[in-house]
Image (cartoon, rainbow, N blue to C red; front, side, top):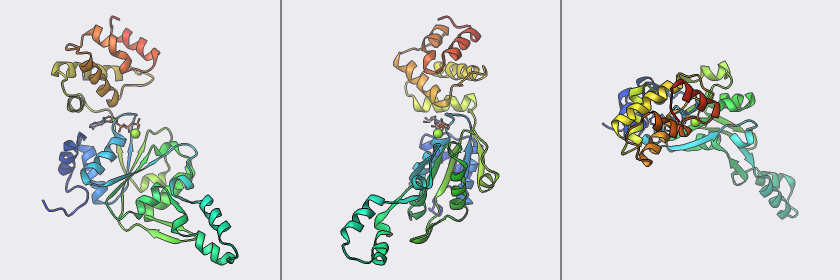
Length: 290
Ligand SMILES: Nc1ncnc2c1ncn2[C@@H]1O[C@H](COP(=O)(O)OP(=O)(O)OP(=O)(O)O)[C@@H](O)[C@H]1O
Ligand SMILES: [Mg+2]
C-alpha cells in the first residue's frame, strides 16, 4: 500500500500494525487510534492504572516511525516546564558581557532562539517530522495547565511575546491520558476524541501475556488470567492491572511453576497484590492455602 498517511489507513490497519509492534488493541481502541490520525484530533484516553493508556501512545509512535514527545503531568507543573522558558542564567551572562551596548540592542540579543529553552509542548509543535505528543496523566495537573493545553490544542500554535507566533508546520498526533482522579473540563473534552480503556477480556489478556512472556505454558496462562479476573471482581484497594499479569507470568516462568494450583497462587500473590489487606482478602475469598 502506498504511504499516503503518516498514521493509519483503517481501523484494521491500526490493529495489525500495532499488534506487530506488540500492542494488542481491541476494536474500539484501534478505531479511535485510526480516527485520531485521520481527523487530526487529540485523543483522550481514560481508565484505571495499568490498562495500556501510555503504552497506546508509545505503540502509535513506534509503528508510525514518529518521535514520541512526552509531557509528564504532575501537581505544580507550570508553563515554564510545559511550554518554554527563557534561559535566565545565560541571559545574565550575556548582559554582563555586553559592556557599553545599549539596552535596546541587548534586549534584542537576549530574547532570541539562542536563549529559549523549549519544553515538550513547544517542541512537539515545532517539529516537522512525524510526532506523537503524549500528555501523560493530565488529571494530575492544576486547572491552569488545562487552559494552556486548550490553547495549544485548538490552534496548534503558541505565541511567545518576544518572538512572535509559532504555528505547527506539521500537526503532532496528540494522546492525553487520565486516571480520572478528577473531572477534566468540558472545553478540553470537547476538543478530543474520547476512549475509555478498561481491563481487557480474558482472551485478549491471555494473548497479551503470552506474547510478552515466552515460555509460559498455555494452561498456566489460562489459569493466571482467570485468577486475575476473579481478583478484579473482589473490590480490592488496588486491582491487578495488565502490567501485574505480565509480571506474574514472568515470575511463574522464572520459578518454573508449570501448574498454577492454589499453593502456587498463594506463594506468588505478592507480585499481583501490593496491599496486605488485599492479600488477606484474596486468600480468604479465593480459599487459598498459604
Ligand atoms: N493492549 C496491550 N497490548 C500489549 N501490552 C499491553 C496492552 N495494554 C497494556 N499492556 C502492558 O501493560 C503495561 C502497562 O501499561 P501502561 O503503562 O500503558 O498503563 P497505563 O494505563 O498508562 O497505567 P497508569 O495509569 O498507571 O499510567 C505496558 O507496559 C504493557 O506491557
Ligand atoms: Mg500511564
